[in-house]
Image (cartoon, rainbow, N blue to C red; front, side, top):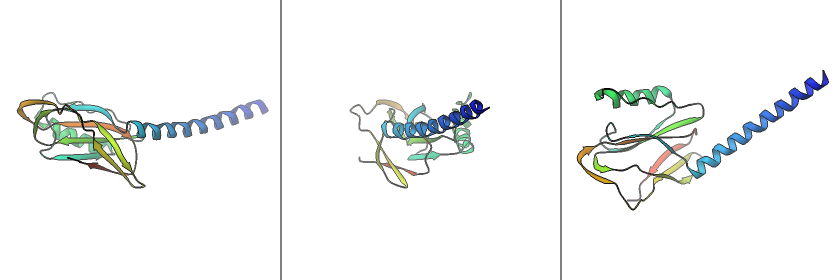
Length: 152
């Protein structure tokens, strides 16, 4: 009986230490690569540049409802675990340039995270069509306000 109780106690302590390790790993991942590109498309974004932060499944579904209004078949909604992750959607506005922006974390304060677009040598491939691209990224869940800084 003592061996059983001792085994359960060790298991409980081991599980608790795993939770701390997972949290620290998420914090380190956020520092290295705060955003992971999940989906990108040249049509369906907004007419003006904007950053949309989504922390609820219903809001993501609402965004895709707007994107898929004129599509047959529509884009599939990515599966996001909103208990541990959140979504950041970057809409570039009306443009004729096709490219995927690369985000980097510029600054992090107690209640804010400032993201910037990484300056790349190649700005993208020009197109004759008028595009309204969007890029959907996921990142570890945070309560901080996400802000886009433009240094153009």
